[in-house]
Image (tube, rainbow, N blue to C red; front, side, top):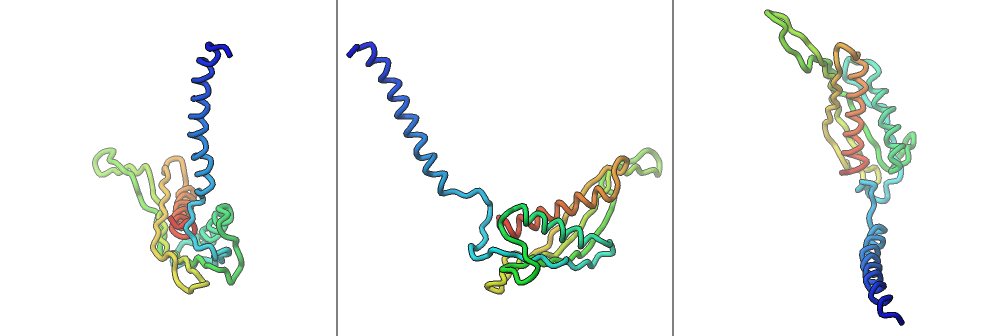
Amino acid sequence: MNPARIRTSLPNRQAQNCLIALIIPFVLGCGVYTFSGSSLPGYLKTVDIPLFINNSLQPGVAEEITEGLTRDVLSSNLLRIVSSGGDASINGRIVSYSNNPHTYGSRGNREVDISEYAVRITLEVEFIDNKKDKPIYSGTIVGEGIYDFQSETEETGRAKAIDHAIEQIIQNSVQGW
């Protein structure tokens, strides 16, 4: 055997062994972890989401939140949606809806320049484990949507507020952070 060949192959072999030693724990460790973000009990497979109750004076907002929440729960692939009798339920009530100035300044004496408005939707939400007849999450959520008054409409702010509220509902209930 050529000694020059041994000297050049030895570092390569050590590098290969080192690389294998680094890869094996990584590969074996990856099978243990899940990135679903869910800490839901394993026996919860289905959820029903009744139409949210609307105690605000804003028409249609309950339907938009219920539909958006249903869409996002479906896309999360954590629970299957059923019309009634689910292993869990997400119930909600819209407490208030407001559209108020958010950012404003002064142009001169007694003149106010409003540049942004904020739509705020306050909801009371409860995520119930129907199998054990107990709440998993219960709380108040405020969805906020800020929009540029000069280039956007209240509907834009409303859509942002609904998306923000739904995101919080998902995080606090289904994903169980």
